[in-house]
Image 1 (cartoon, rainbow, N blue to C red):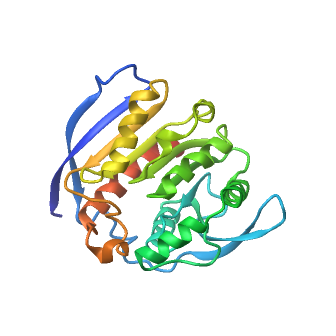
Image 2 (image 1 turned 30 degrees about the vertical axis):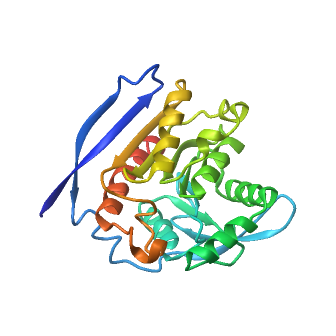
Length: 266
């Protein structure tokens, strides 16, 4: 089995009071890290989740329904795309009951302009209803929850956590920003650790992570910055694949799997 080595800047703060935890490490990732999940396809399906106002919303789901841990995925600004489905299916095969809420209500984009139009058309109140419906679907006694958001979905993944902070055990934000701008009264409710992963060439999420690190010293955040990667490196639709980086994507899964295992399976 061949291994590849990549330098990754890791900044970790576990309820720290300063920046003393900044360090450099090497990340070791096998080309065969996901040999099983790469060969098994179509393990997910669409379901309907009902909001408190009785409206049913679509979600893409995978994983055992009786799993002890569950993950709420929030898609990027393209919507529920093949990349979103693959994320849900991978997490489902790792043993988590996983759903990706559909904030575009059955629509998805394959161009930047159409994605931007869908994102701008989102209604904040309805988005919150959909997120809450996802939480209510996944939540059950004794089950640990995590939220996971990509790009524009990162801030919504954090907001989902803050809707029911006692229920969540972790949040993962992948090249997402603006969560550092959430009002302080809401951030005060955060009880669980946060993992932020991004590329070094992506200023928006890098700055958001560093701002959160600096301003929320009582919170737990781990930040992984992959060198040389730009925005949306795990989404082949972004910029027609110009930024897509399969190696950075594999490293991201490595880091995320470790984080989720520590906080959902222990």
